[in-house]
Image (cartoon, rainbow, N blue to C red):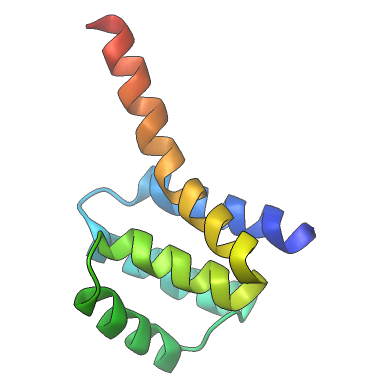
Length: 98
């Protein structure tokens, strides 16, 4: 249970501050790798290759991969939702004022 909270926190932070597309998440993923040990730098290279070759946004693919390898299905779901939640919140706030 605690790992899911940590996954949500790390990827929410990534989604909140990584502006500029999927490759802008790379520094955050390096920090996650160093602070948690969930994956190595060589794993990160493999994640980039797989994320580039599969359909969908790179950041979402990498969040799903890390979450799934760390905590299974629920980890993948939580990490993906955490990455996109800040964008959804900003869109809802902007649409409210428009």
